[in-house]
Length: 147
Length: 145
Image (cartoon, rainbow over all chains, first blue to last red; front, side, top):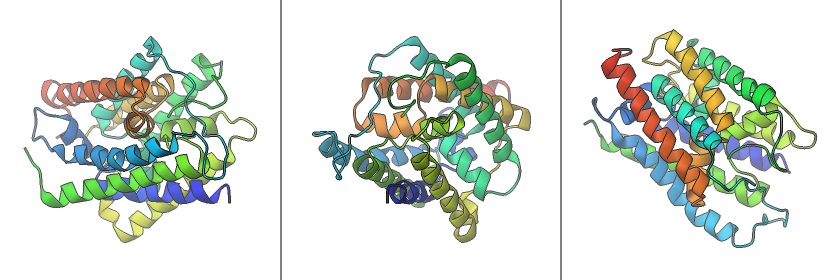
């Protein structure tokens, strides 16, 4: 049972990414490239996702336990630091350059044709390992990483 | 500017599904639906903290295969950028999301929904540098279409 919810959530997440257009790197770049043939439609993905999650997260976090009474693992870091800003800046550059972010990269690597998404995924995993094995030797808190 | 009604409806619908997924994870599993964080915890696993991550990624993979079967046009898997840039971009996304503790899902959807200051700052940052990178690669360097 503990694994059913994450599995179903993962499936819904992938379908959501596919329907929304997030798995189309050309569309992602057209969204970020405001000086080109700007396609703002992906802003509605954020609107839809945040619109739904904002309402439920607000209610859920009044008492931060799950419906079964287990604690909700929220990020333990609270301050805005250089590591957060530098990391997010680098992530954005990669996202805008190729049009893939981690979720869509995974979905496209598994479900798409052609090697591009697989190549991106390989490089992305290498980059993640570089930080996790190299720089990030200390793991922070009971719950790892992001968000 | 290009903006069509079907793409707005698709974006809203798909976004809502992502919001539902994130809500399921929060309310039933007590976890944040952040892809880069979930992946990071699989790459460097810790005892007792791997199963739910693998389950989520497995579900994501099944969803990807379903998309490929039912709506193959939604998973094009190509990028307008040349392959060398795709490699560089992949490295940057990998390094950046682990340094910055999150990506579009963890910070952009989950964190922003909780109005978490770290996620609001991260999202503002990656949207800005994403727009800058798109501008530089398309218009200054003339890469991609």
